[in-house]
Image 1 (cartoon, helix red, strand yellow):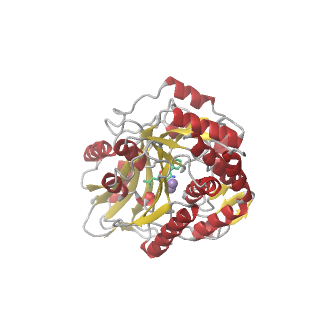
Image 2: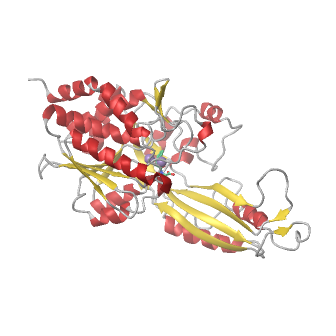
Image 3: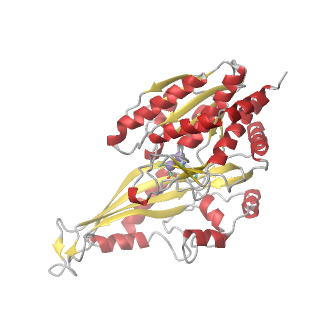
Length: 457
Ligand code: BES
Ligand code: MN
Ligand code: MN
């Protein structure tokens, strides 16, 4: 008898072109969760995905929320004694703008240099769909899956997952699992598969500074009345010190020192600061003193302005004293910082640094807690083996600078362990124009995931 895994891998090989063209169909649906004009498209992506889960041999349905629906696929034929994996991903994508910066249209997937260019190709449709195809390969060749599997795909990850936390709470039993599997992050480099040891958290705010009740002539009033633009600039400048540290009192109190082993593993990774600098087109790299680039990106917290709005920004000059100024400011957090506490600290900081005459208001936009993995245990070993077999190289441990707020919630509410295996590459333009996903990773990754499901039995 032919061992089943050989059949499964042969099925993946034989269906390579179809797997590609189906992904293209998925990528053509502009499921931009942030924009109400795309609500119909977002729902269509959910329905399309549910249809593909059914075609693969799973039960699937759309569960409504007050926002975009949740797609839930289920296959429990392995029985109550077998382990259950919850596969999480998102079918929504970031807005594609600015459109003129794309070399091919964002929702017309285009192949160039072994890459699929399209919004969502890497984040996260391409990676989510790899799981669907790995599951299909098992079901099509053996009629079963090695373990029980629940696929949960949400349509609001890119807008803060506000409906997912209550959903997980309300469906604890249905979502009960031993392991949460997520492919929504990066590999360290092409040909170098990776397993994630952390994700940063996020605390996102809007700071509004108000001055006079209306815009004023800057000659008639400038010098005697507060300028919210000037005041906001001072506030923003006060957020960092000369060493690149966040200057909000108490900000580092809950930051736990990372263990020496992980720091040594980070130091051992093949990272080249000079190549990284040159690729980004900056004269020098900056950041918190005392830490290397990868540490700054993965295991240290940050504060960044994400947008500023104030005064006249049109053509030419206008002498005006604006009545208000706003900034979007976000903090990336590391264990054991919490978004709620950072909000309180920031509020106290603003009260201290806001210049006289200005009134400041702080609004919380969204947040999520940081996550730290235990890189050990049977599921981790299974993933390491599966990746090595598929890519021909042992996976390296890496951190994630970005945030997936639901990961900690899954672990706590479902008492499960999360395993994050990313397949996109650094520089793949997530959230930016010309997002791409390597075809090699799509194809090898489906094989790696099929092997992983087998090894989790
Ligand atoms: N897939 C990303 C998160 C990510 C990217 C983690 C790269 C690690 C490396 C996810 O879709 C995302 O963009 N998350 C947002 C947070 C969310 C609350 C909007 C982020 O990190 O900004
Ligand atoms: Mn994502
Ligand atoms: Mn994203």
